[in-house]
Image 1 (cartoon, rainbow, N blue to C red):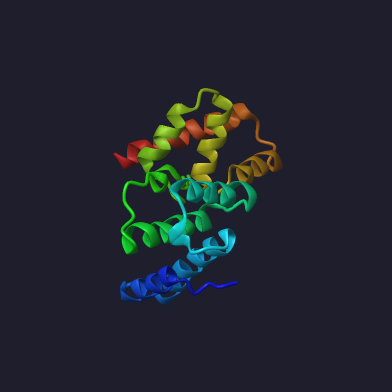
Image 2 (image 1 turned 90 degrees about the vertical axis):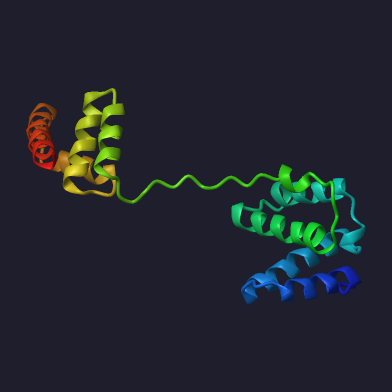
Amino acid sequence: MNNTYPSITKFQQFVELKDYRPPTKKEYVRYVRKCAEHFGCDPLTLTEDQLRGYFLFLRQEKHYSRSPMKAAKFSLRSFFVDCHKVSGWTVFAEVRIAEPLILPVVLSRQEVAAVLGAVRQSRMGVYLELSQYLGHASLDTTVIYTHLTSISEARTRAALETLHRAVTTTSH
């Protein structure tokens, strides 16, 4: 198959002028070539609807995850919009790639207080407070320790309330 379409050659030169890292340059051109191979033609001849269908194919058939989908979107946007000055297409704004929801590794005192304040079941609050006091990264670790030491919930709650009062009075 002919991958050396004039539009791809122009894009390769365009990318070389950018201040991208070498692997990024290589990936941008590779994603445009994959699009050309998929359709079997010069990608510059594609319509916006064909490109929209290609993004659906990547997501639904190829099951592209966040990272490759993002690379495909930005590579093709650079090819069509930045290099070849195609205008008026909305497909690049339509393709949404959600950022992952990542919790922070360490919560601040204010964030811990907010989490503990949002807990409606006292039993869960006990586990969360014990977890925070023991510095466990996982609530499962706290649950295991609580069961191993056979501490009753009432005794744990009383101990934690005392500990919580001591910590809050020393931190203010």
